[in-house]
Length: 227
Image 1: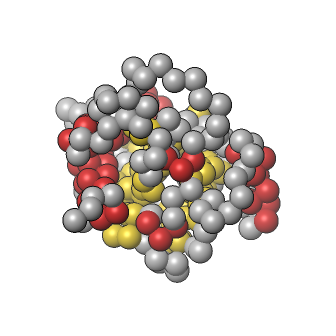
Image 2: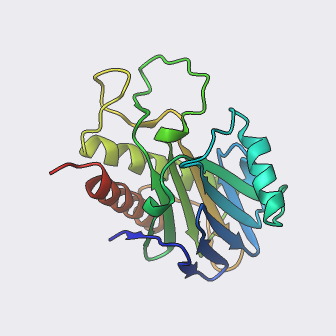
């Protein structure tokens, strides 16, 4: 079951500490390796933190997410060069958390810009109202290849979950597999037993898949299902 985070909630793992603030979730990490498609410090990185910042009730970032997040991090005294930065317009009181055997999942989910990869879109805006942001932290030590594998597995699980709930594209009648601006981040401890694979046929991949599925389905049922 997904826990909806409240201001002041803390989650601690073997190599990280997450705190929910009024407008953002901040996860500080130690001795870690990560991969993401985030606007700020995306790609492979040895991060010291991950931030998921909510623009709910604020002015838009004017399609300059890197500059916007850099100012936020400067304001709270965090390293702009080694923090993975995510933005969303999802309300901060709808951020969720779930824990599995090997991993922790933090998620914020909006469906305003749900889409199919076959919609043929050319979109120039930020699309942050519809963003699904997923941050996975695992106490296992994943090789770079396994981080890529875990990223792929998480995206597969997200797409399956949306299709299972029959979420439709806002731009066509196709089943949605995500939104137009989704961000996924996988962060692994550099301690512990090394894993070279994280696909759906592995223990870690199965754990990731269940966590992502549980998180997405639960939040859709809590906030996006009427009746």
